[in-house]
Image (tube, rainbow, N blue to C red; front, side):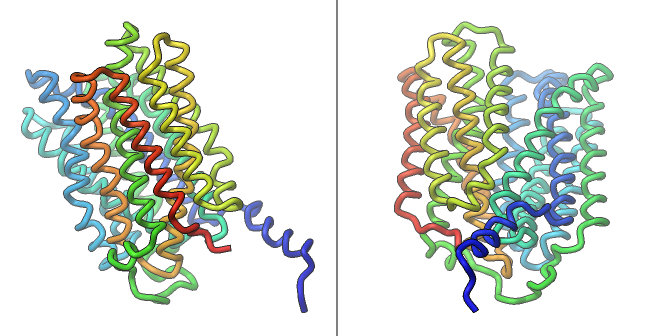
Length: 405
């Protein structure tokens, strides 16, 4: 018996309107706690490092060592997921970061702080890659975009609230936010350990349905190759240049006060939140490619305009548009990788390389852009970053649409 077009349309819309599965809500709660805790520490970490009589460069190394260890340990994280399952690696990663963060609070010299913070990077990539695997395993295929958007929104909410609470806690001493972050991570681990039902490689209806996807197999998919490229570009621009170069530009070129950069980051987050309110649903209905191409182009053009800004109004508007573009592409990108792997398979190594691409961009992007800014000016530096994102959009234009309707 054939279905009428009307009934088919209703069935196609209904899953989008249904409530998210319980396990996904558990993941959202954990993401909020993690981001909240990270936001507690981020504003005070460089200041805390300088209390050990080191300069600005050494304090910056404390921040960079975390990203470097994430990159270095990512392949091992993928192997661990294949052996022990996503949930076990997720919880273990959280507890490692909790222990290292608590140890930072009791560091007696700079080198202890450096070692403890570096160990946290290893745990961070474990739970980050495992979280992606859990979302793939637990999210209904027809709602992957919406789930990715909801996860990003939960993380964003915690990231925005965290620095506010962290600033208040810092009044009790610079070591207190580290202990609060460790407590938040332990809470997140307990939530996932006790409330999450799936995620051990035996999720309901997917038990050992297919062998784990290898990296070579994924690399043969044009959608995965495009996702790697865009992950690198997004890490370069959103997690690297935005955090490291935009604050310098605001002070050096616009002659603004240091807090202006904080306003720009907040406005970026606001634009991001606006896009996340609908981009996940659009990625599920229109497809991943349209959202990826649009988001990369919007972010790329807005980033280029930042470098041409001559007043604060243009600077803030361009920051908001860049944040909006990042929110458009984010859920579609994660959903696209999930489509490549499929719900019934594990893809620890595939996800690890995807995460490594973003971390690599976040590490080398600010360095190369800084060299461009010093040699040719900030206009060229931001133009190069914008051009990279537009090239990523071109890569997606020739890739396949990963959403299977």
